[in-house]
Image 1 (cartoon, rainbow, N blue to C red):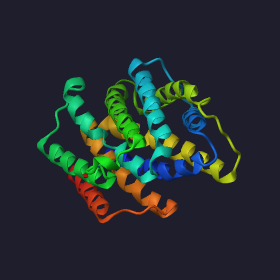
Image 2: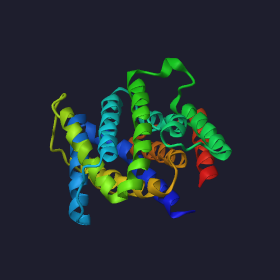
Image 3: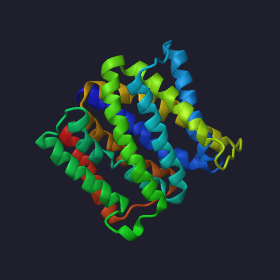
Image 4: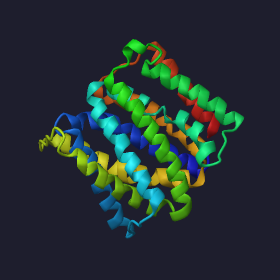
Length: 270
């Protein structure tokens, strides 16, 4: 396995843990402060540790804005559905990435990538229960919007990291996301200094955000947008498993089949 592929899968592993961690944090903190503090504190942490600073780079700034908007739809939608479904539906973005990449990146999916994408998305839909439209609620719909925004973020990430590098991109996009997400803080503001909520927030800041986004930026800077999107589908696997282990959520036989299809899709592009 190449180092970019490994980097993206490790990022997906960390992002997968964010879904149950978010569920814990939301019990004590409203979505706005979680999103804002997650972006701000992780960016400041990386600035201090790496001794680098953000730059005024249009693609990086726009990527950060789109990422913050995606988080808004995802986080405010999560209380309306389940953590495992959020992990799944928000990761349908490779569909949009494959459609938009030829237009915006001049990157066309290969036959192998197309097959992998088809298998993976069928698996995602199976796990998400979206074969039955009656099971889709408002929270699910909000996460489909988040998925489209994530696809645009991936495409801009690919452009930006090629120009300014993974570290500068991560810092610039992170700061941009922080400024946008500041608007979410007053919405239903609630901040209880409960140990489990603060621990969950700390985990989100250090691992899925600071380390996860840095690994992601390195991976996508060396791998195409379509392949990167498919590899990031492993977030579905890790998100579903950690939600089951930590939150006691369960999956139906159809959902287990879906996870198997997602795993096959990832293996095809590794």
